[in-house]
Length: 128
Image (tube, rainbow, N blue to C red; front, side, top):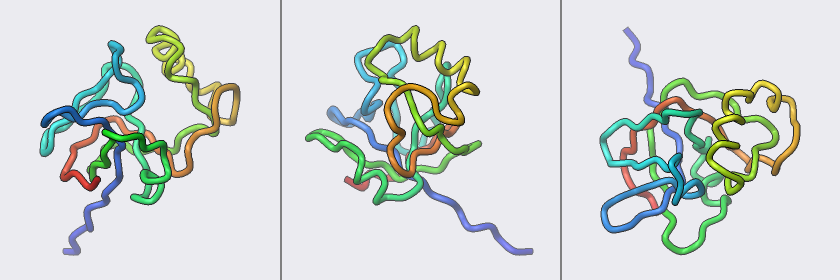
């Protein structure tokens, strides 16, 4: 029986002490927290991840942001455009509920290259 090779993805996060948390949606009720070796899944929507390490590096990387190597469940393509995550928590919750209208394009900012969605991720190690 052939063993399937593990697929890895990349997650850009912020780090404070030993705690990893959402890089973009922080200081809100939608902020997610991550711990190496433990699975995280959101209450609303999905988790933004990157297809390649280089895609994650090309994303905005101000000081304090790190890249985690992760495994992921139910990975799907992201739409061409995503909303400005700074608008409001309620706007983001509504966006996730109505995401099908965005899959072909729509309003918002251009989705960063290599962006994928996942229902759950498990961080394996910190890369940067």
